[in-house]
Image (tube, rainbow, N blue to C red; front, side, top):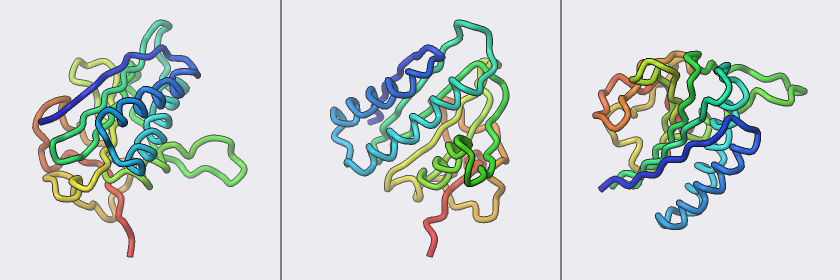
Length: 173
């Protein structure tokens, strides 16, 4: 049985910290392993920071964070905002003070991607972590696929078609 929780946050620099604290607390209630929790909290903070910093939207728009713990132990975290611009990973120079958030997501998540929201306003950026990700339909390694490619993605709460995962991380040799 899936468990889920959702938070609506203001587009504020403080929202990333609040989201991290909320997920850390929820992870304790769900009794998630510490390593999974630490990774999820870090990556959620990166996605909320991106939504607050880079989404060019009218004042008053909120950021939504949603976490779903599947019965297979996979944690899916989604961050939605009102901007239609899909994220594009970039390579940060060694002296850049920012620009590494999506690289962290790509490196640490078992699967991640972005898609336009079903309502037609904004986008959702998501990641999944947990031992069950690799065995799921649609979460196979996509070696050689450009991380900047973005499929429409799985619909929120809907089935997971096999061709909707735009990026996956190879565990390496």
